[in-house]
Amino acid sequence: MPPFAIENILELDRRHVWHPYAAMVDPPPVFPVAAAHGVRLRLADGRELIDGMSSWWAAIHGYNHPALNAAMHEQIDRMAHVMFGGLTHGPAVALAEQLTGIAPAGLASVFFCDSGSVAVEVAIKMALQYWIALDRPEKNRLLTIRGGYHGDTFGAMAVCDPVTGMHGMFRAHLTPHFFADRPTCRFDGPWDERDLESFRQLITVHHDQLAGVILEPILQGAGGMWPYHPEYLRGVARLCEQYDVLLILDEIATGFGRTGRLFAAEHADLRPDILCLGKALTGGCMSLAATLATRRVSDTISAGGAGVFMHGPTFMANPLACAAALASVKLLLGSDWQTRVRAMEAQMARELAPCRDLPQVADVRTIGAVGVVELHRPVAMRRITRRFVERGVWLRPFGRLVYIMPPYIITADDLTRLTTAMVETIAEEQGGAA
Ligand SMILES: *Cc1c(COP(=O)(O)O)cnc(C)c1O
Image 1 (tube, rainbow, N blue to C red):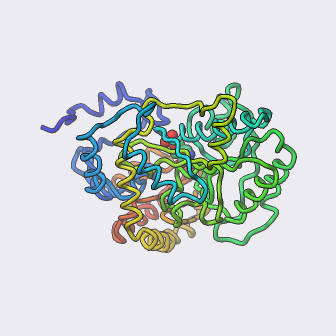
Image 2 (image 1 turned 90 degrees about the horizontal axis):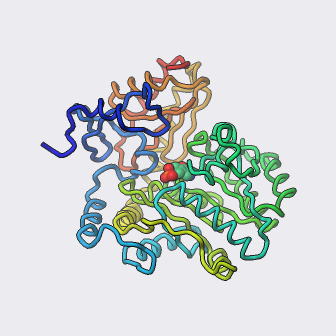
Image 3 (image 1 turned 135 degrees about the horizontal axis):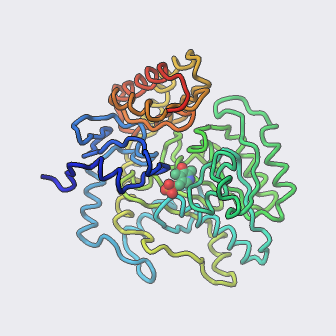
């Protein structure tokens, strides 16, 4: 009997385990997974689901990939972990070199941490410490755009969308930042200069208080799955330069090919001062994130009063996670991922198009390996999840959004099964509460 073959897993889960954004009282159903391989999740009852989520953007190579497993086996026999204060190791150094080589030009200093939210906290702290070091501590606010998502910790929450995020409940504990209107020009539509007006106005008025601008380039993820125009970002970068405000890009979701470029910043030739990476960094098999900064940022902080950057997670640069990340990045760069992602985009656009004719559908959009159907009303989560599982696919809609971002290795046939399940299930969907 394999370990964790727990007879009463659902009962024990219900009794003791808190799931993300879930209640402990009358929790929604969860599905026990026994194993996963390629694009398939095998449930404990033997059913197999085609994965449309890549475990939240992360598993770009699919599950149980032999190259990632081999890298982790090799590393675990040396050491699973060792502290990073005063010590260093091959996996971290090799990964840092690799990342600085592929990231937008100029990002030469890498700070490792454990999760995306912490990478955002680190980025915010870097921006604040940069201005403190320059004796301009009044530059301590951030400017962002509405509809963003940057994580669940307090610093990150404060720059998430103020309406759909958690500002209402935690207002008293969140630093008030500045929010420009969300860009409305679509990624593949015409550009209208007026789209930048709200952002231009805020940075013009408040730049003396601004440490940085933080946003998700090209594709806003969990805040609404919204791909917007590269020209917006070129305008943002110009204004940051003009008003001496640091540009922080959160590529935790978009990084590693998801939007069709290795980093979404490339769609607009951006050169950020600070860049956050996570999610697909390890190919989805370990928790690891990184915040990259230019030498200007890291040298200024290092020359400041504190003399050091004030952050240091216990599990910083975990060797096992770094080894997995290095293997994942090499696997990606050695593959023909651009062709795959382009083919997925074309196929999803074609196969999701019929949703446009459904009265309950407000919009259909695709970018890179992401396909989104936006409904007029929120989906009934429990019902729609059950219907997807019955159709042999794994999707996790939220609010009015039903979307897929499968592993890049998915075959055309499996992708058709995902899109077919989407179209059929959405056609049944009337909206309303579960
Ligand atoms: C998921 C996400 C985060 C938070 O990452 P965690 O690993 O969940 O803490 C931050 N920013 C963006 C853009 C994300 O998609």
